[in-house]
Amino acid sequence: MLVIRRKPGETVLIGDSIEVEILDASPNRVTIGIRAPADVLVLRKEILIARSENQAAARALPPELLDSILSRFQQRER
Amino acid sequence: MPQLETRQFGVLDYQPETVLEFPAGIPAFEHERRFLPVEQAATSPFVFLQSLATPELMFLTLPALLVEPGYRLDLAQEDLELLGLSAAPQRIDQDVHCLAIVTVQPDGRLTANLLAPVVINPKTRQAVQALQPGYSPQHPLPDGEVPCS
Image (cartoon, rainbow over all chains, first blue to last red; front, top):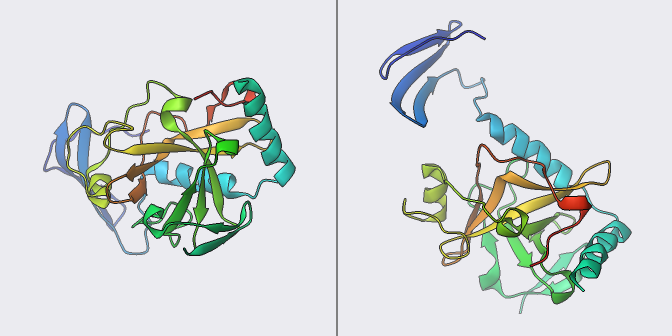
């Protein structure tokens, strides 16, 4: 991984068309501004994880599996 | 009272004021803006989030504090704005409600998504799926079971 040290107000270029500017930095949060062509998708990485986990969670559960999940819990509660 | 068709529960009567509005949708389901939380004694403490638009779309969730008693939220500014909240601390069960979506993994394990919890402003019924980096998207539920309330 390429590591570059930058200060707020400084910029990094990626290829011909993408600019990443450090807007603000505090001990536990960095604010960055990204200039990129409209056809370049810019996402927080966690969004991709959330997308795939949502798709997995939305898969219809067979009714008998759901019943077994619920009854496992109910047995434990008694 | 309006009625809602669901795959899991058949036709449900519901109170319109209990519907949750997701102004930004949720990742992978950006067009799904309205969900009904379904809580029934027989299925407690699970909360089902049933889409109003799509009868087949239902998420199984658990209160995040049941999954992880020490769970803490640190909401991003854009999520606070979507919820209509100020930057004050967001105490779960007081200022906001917080649900973790449960997934049955292909090997049968149950996991809860603590990376991307559903956060609800109970006063306005607005909700977002917030990102909480540092937490696991597949937090294991012990022995594939769920904790007691």
